[in-house]
Amino acid sequence: MQKLLILGTGGMAHTHAAAFAAIPDCKIVVAVDNNPDNLAQFCAEFGVETRFNDLADAIAWGEFDAALNVTPDPIHHPTTMALIAAGKHVFCEKPLAETYPLAKEMADGIEAKNLVGMVNLTYRNSAGIQLAHELVRDGEIGEVRHFEASYRQSWLVGNHWGDWQTEQRWLWRLSEAHGSLGVLGDVGIHILDFAGFAANSEVAEISCKLKTFHKAENDRIGDYPLDANDSAIMNIELKNGALGVIHASRFATGYANALKLVVHGTKGAVRVDLDQSWDHLDICRGDNVHTQAWERIKAPDVKTNYARFIDALNNGQTQDPSFRTAANLQKVLDLCVESDGLGKTIQI
Ligand SMILES: NC(=O)c1ccc[n+]([C@@H]2O[C@H](COP(=O)([O-])OP(=O)(O)OC[C@H]3O[C@@H](n4cnc5c(N)ncnc54)[C@H](O)[C@@H]3O)[C@@H](O)[C@H]2O)c1
Image (tube, rainbow, N blue to C red):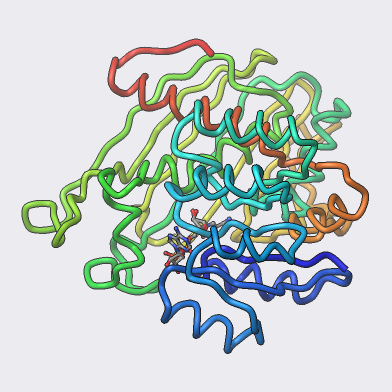
């Protein structure tokens, strides 16, 4: 039985708790949060008896094997480094850290101690994207020439996830001073991973344009200057020579949380649209390239990141997405900011 600590008991922690409750051989035995209300509500809902307000006290107590780090982005690095120092395996929320040097330190640290370190790049849970990865890897669409990927949210316009103007939990996502890298840091890592994983290659060269739109009086709410980017557009060349574009936005009115991807090769193309299905993909191949007909394929079931983390704990082998994968993606995100500032293309 893997004994789990959950660090951070806000919104996403509820998803973790429900997911790990459905997996055999593991149990959340302790919860930690410096917000006593969130902690009490979470522990009551999920029946967790042992709780601490401070991670240092939980580490001193020590009766757990691995930690689920579900704190806000800027808290991931210091808390994960403390957990690594204490010899604990870590399943960390994305992005791994706010910058590549911090993310690299986390990846180096966990590998040096031979601990399991995985990152919750949620969209790897889609059977459709896993099958796209395999088909492209196995040459089913020939050499990859192009890809087009988008991650569209609209919570700055619609109230479907609450009200960012009045609810504290949204504000850190809007303010650089509070550790946010904007839409780039929040979902840029998801869509970069989604595209690179399906196209089976890494970024070689990138040019990025970021934009922060006007959205409140003086672009400020209380202590929070609303200065984090809302939209990111990337032009990318991959190491396999493919050219692609990625768009991520929180102002994509009409979409709640939509990820779409098309990868075009010399012998065919694959398309994944998570609004349509998490476990299907469309493929155009063979003679269909002459008529542009697409066939819908049901992908075989895949394990979630949560289940694969428990497998990794059981057999001592880190699986992807690892800390290293997430650190390498963080490097690309850092270069997006640099490219935007300099207004030019940057090679990795
Ligand atoms: N993988 C995904 O699809 C996905 C989806 C949503 C959020 N996330 C990530 O999950 C993380 C948490 O997001 P959220 O929406 O749950 O945020 P949230 O603000 O709702 O919850 C964060 C919790 O962490 C607590 N916390 C902050 N500092 C702490 C500290 N030093 N020690 C202990 N507890 C601390 C807060 O009190 C809060 O209860 C973020 O990194 C976010 O990017 C990932």
